[in-house]
Image (cartoon, rainbow, N blue to C red; front, side):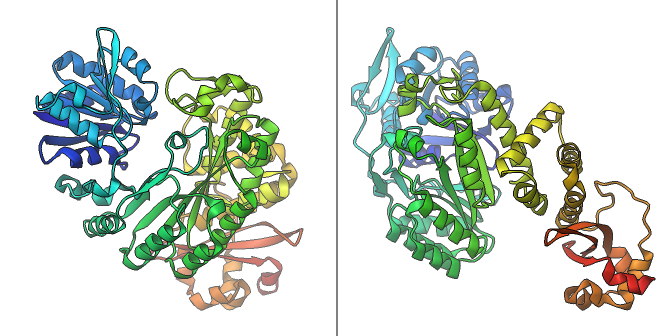
Length: 580
């Protein structure tokens, strides 16, 4: 009996951990092959590849991001392989099973509910004739128009599960993809928008087995690890043990990302990481979602924002760990003004990444079950994103989406950090006002419907400031030039501001005669005339210094070997006596 476990991932670099657990649980007795694709692959190509494997059984791992594409694939497969048995599992089909069986009665034969390791193996035993369907636990099927549902098995003993990381066929791609690690299952919290709230309690895998798997993966080339534990730091002692292990045994270039709960992170743990973790080794993802206390109470989310701020600030000031903070627009009783406050509260923490997401009414969650209480209107199909509720109109949601668009382009990409800091801190009333006004301008200009290159980001911001804040244009332009030159790899051939007919030869002569005018670091470069002209870019503008605009020269030197830019600034007055 040939069995294929398949998944349509969001991107090629992603890997599906679930199908690997299923294979590990049953491979001693059955021939099982893994097959991974992406949601962007043509459906016919996916179906054709699966057809060529000639499977008797195909299992699909289903999530909100791949369910509709998966349905198309199995619909095609059932036409070209009508005898193949199709099993669906995963969080998207675990809840509202009757709906999925009715909708997919011509495509899916069985649905696995919840954890699948035991159920999947028992289904294979059933197909091979060694047990009856009545002996299968946690599976559902449709027969004669009626749902046949077998009770779920007892919770899996995680310490008894075989490793899903030792497959030889995975080794060649470990260095090219993200490796997902699971050290626990379950969540202690009850956030009503999250599927993790449905399962009570937290169970752990064997610590030493997890460490052994990580060592094995690193030895075979894995470099980017993402822990999928819902709250990695729920146990301080466990988190500390794993942090210490990773600090001492990591390989160069390795990155580990965790989902943590910010307000329960102990200061002494953060201090330990600040003192001992190599820079860039760890990344933290922290779900803030909302700073509205009433909203958090309604979704049963306990959060102490002052303690969360302490955590984020300590991590930021330590300079070792990058942080990704999440917000959700559309939570109960958070209107446009309240979400604006939430955004500003979190933006002021200056995370490396701020993800602005929109509430998704996931099947099985408390918010979906009680959607009528807040007049939720949402998409019928995955990802079930909200369209409106009793606090947010669809028009307001569209406006917040404009904020999301430019936030992703201008903050999370970190192309114009100094410029954006000036605009959000000194020019616009609040950060949200900047992103909202710019996002609306971007959308109304039609730019959301066309692509953009790096230079376009600068030109479009320039156009926006020129119209909305002309008094700040000169200072903004100076900072935009600085950000552009600072973040460019090697000397740019053509700058976004275009060719300007300027002769800086006298300034260069002044720098050669007295390099100290550009500072000690520039003097230490000891550049000769040829090097100065060949590897530098010189510009001028108005730099805001102590509230006053000062005419300033901006010099970027690009190291000829690595292309990294060094930026030097000096007022025009410092060189005038040398060139007069």
